[in-house]
Amino acid sequence: MGDLTHIDSVKSYLNKDNDTHDALLSMLIAGVSARMEMFMGRIFEEMEHTENIESPGYPALVVDNGPIIRVISVVEGATTLASDDYRIEGRSLVRLSGGVMTTWGQGVTVVVKYEAGYEDVPADIDLACVMQVTREFGMSTAGSGVLGVLRVAANQDTGESYTYEMRSWLREVEQTMKAYRVF
Image 1 (cartoon, one colour):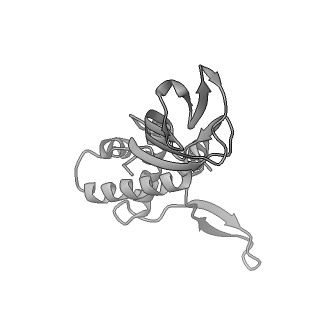
Image 2 (tube, rainbow, N blue to C red; image 1 turned 135 degrees about the vertical axis):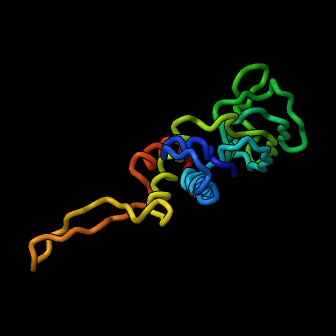
Image 3 (cartoon, rainbow, N blue to C red; image 1 turned 30 degrees about the vertical axis):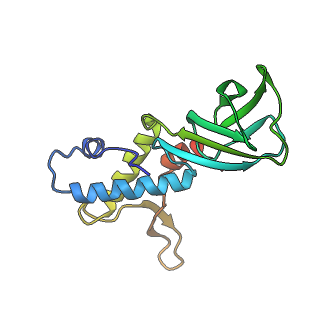
């Protein structure tokens, strides 16, 4: 897991040019990045993966991580496949025979070794991370207090009261993450 934004981006968003809170901001960036990746069920950093997939006999096998950058090797049963025996489509490997789509062997274990992730974090995810880190910084003592969504709730004695409602994710951040969610 890697950070989904950089400290300079957060400091720019906060309009801060000193390093007074760099340790706190770095900690928040790491924590928010990890929570965002967990929420989305994906790792954005480029990484190598190996998966053993029990083939159901369909034309496409779906791997757990994406997008696929490159396939290192594919072994179907005991046979190592050439790169023209499959094609990459998103997070799927489509089985080919003579350039024509066919099916993977049913019940056969397919071992796929591949690299997946993003060379650069998508701009909307980067911004979502900046926004969430900024919010959490604002809730800290260093950020000068507790922030939340002000909500007016009815009170029988006085007629109304004010409470703060804390959301774990900003609405915009959650909306952005849902577009990348794997499961």
